[in-house]
Image (cartoon, rainbow, N blue to C red; front, side, top):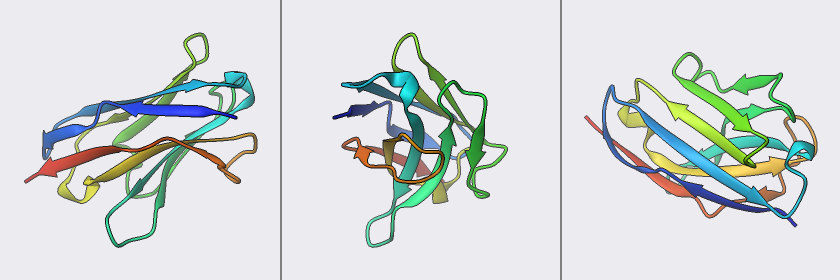
Length: 119
């Protein structure tokens, strides 16, 4: 069982930056594809970004492409989401997720961290 713990959320002004972190434990980190998702109250959870097992591949939602950067440090069992040029529409609860497959079957989830972007 994979345990994921997010941190780094908070309040940021539009145009600013924020970095989210995700600490993983319970399974070999290199065996996991790591992803970030977000959810606004009353709406479905949506995909934000994913990074492959050793970081060679990344994938982004069109809404964050060019602004957000996903990365990982396998030596530290950590995944990150660098959020730049944030917009009020980026306000959401952000979740870290893990899968053993590329871009599907994310079965392990963190508790979420709130990101609020003020205009």
